[in-house]
Amino acid sequence: MSMPTFMHNDDLLALQEVLASQSLLSLFVEDAQRVDRFSCEASGLYLDYSKNRVNERVMGLLLATVREKGLPEKIQALFSGELVNYTEKRPALHTALRGAIQTPVDKQTLIMAAQAQMAAFVDSVHSGRWLGATGKTITDVINIGIGGSDLGPLMVTQALRAYRHKGIRCQFVSNVDAADLLAKLEVANPESTLFVVASKTFTTLETLTNATTARSWLIDAMGDNADISKHFVATTSNVANAVAFGICEDNVFPMWDWVGGRYSLWSSIGLPIALGVGMDHFKALLAGARDMDTHFASQPFESNMPVILAVLGVWYANYWEAESHAVIPYAHDLRTFPKYLQQLDMESNGKSAGRDGPVKYSTGPIIWGEAGTNGQHSFHQLLHQGTRLVPVDFIAPMKANHEHGAHQIHLFANCLSQSYALMVGKTREQAKQEFLDIGYSEEESERLADHKVMEGNRPTNTILMNQLTPKNLGALIALYEHKVFVQSVLWDINPFDQWGVELGKKISTLISAVMTDLGDAGDFDASTQNLIRRFQAVQGDNDHESDS
Ligand code: F6P
Image 1 (cartoon, rainbow, N blue to C red):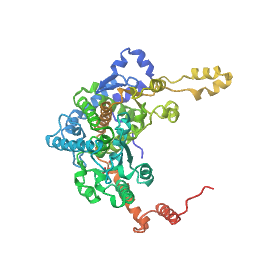
Image 2: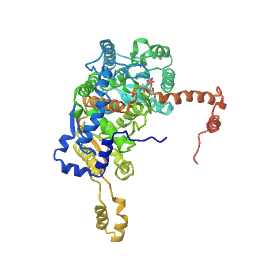
Image 3: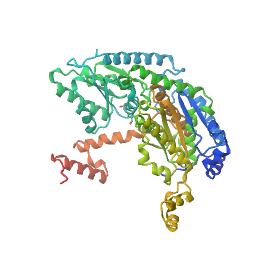
Image 4: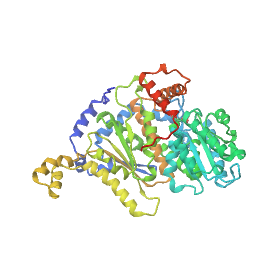
């Protein structure tokens, strides 16, 4: 499938050509105010976007495009609960969950009741009033969910490790490969374990399979003492299915169809977060996101952080042919943030249908990344010398959540060194001189110089926060949620549905039926039939493979 990457704005196309011939460093030389001009602050976050291949004219035109696309009205529609998810005829009210000002009153009532239920439950677990079936207090929380019912809570719980409730270990199971569940069960004591079955629909195959195996594990281990109601709670909008599973209705925490799965960590899907770090910290997370909501809804676009990140992303995706975008947090506790963003961004904007038919330009890029400094020793080589343009967001808390200042200095220095090196690169003369300096001959140095050349001029954003706190984290997540939304407006796509994942789910049910001799293999092509047969052939064989 080939798709033209350009959106058609002749002025921007012309400016792209001009900027492609200018080095980033020269833009700093030309404009002493460049850092002030291309930076902004919001909700505890500072964004420096001066190391981008933009000038004021480009930013002005990109922001004008956003206005032409009706962003102010679209923001209003999002916050006030209009049916912005128009293919599923639903609102997308994740902002309501953190108390955004325009929240419809009926939703406010539901949200407050759900938060009160969460708070009471978290308190009963933390205070030791909630007991397992044999009278033991809860030491292990295992969240069973997938996609939005896993990644958000997992990422936040890891990110807020410094705030964790010392008596509780939170683990997350998502993969239908039993290896995931078994690894977590290995270190858990059934008598003091609480499972949170997290599924908006309570129909997801992976989650129900894992929950059923976890239930059997508990019953097998506890025998006559087993009491599911003391060890399983659910976060779902499908109360009937949760109750049918054996979960007491009082222990079902509500979800609603007006909150999308990948936007749901702010709802009761965030229960493992609250259990892991406490309700106060969960509320601080919401408050940080609410601050960012207010900024997004009220700040002029020239200094509106989500809008700026969004237009920069579109600039590279649609005018510079960038196919991917890297997000690299220089904080080990944020290592799952890129993975979380993959769902948020790619499940939202990985679409080719516009409101009025197929789009004729590239939409959401491939999102990827890893915590720094680890990435420097794996994929940064490609960022520096590869043939593809990969814009990067560096995210860095400046103050550590620990006492080891020397580590923090190395960490932050490495973060800055990467954005600087990506910008300045290395010339051929410098590269050749380096070879000469280590004793290579003139001829060798001349021949090998290209191998050390770094083109430079690779665009980066740097997002700083004072410290990785619940509030700053809430703001950071909301920043990216809104960035994704703005891009969806520019690309004219619905960021709140995910029809693309449905077909694979349906087919897997049909293939499972064939594999268990309940379906007709003839429905599938020769390759798929062959692969099924090969699978079936090894199933009867109980021996473990030996490599010897
Ligand atoms: O993968 C598709 C998806 O619907 C995601 O959007 C969602 O987060 C995930 O499955 C889990 O769904 P549920 O919470 O209903 O189990």
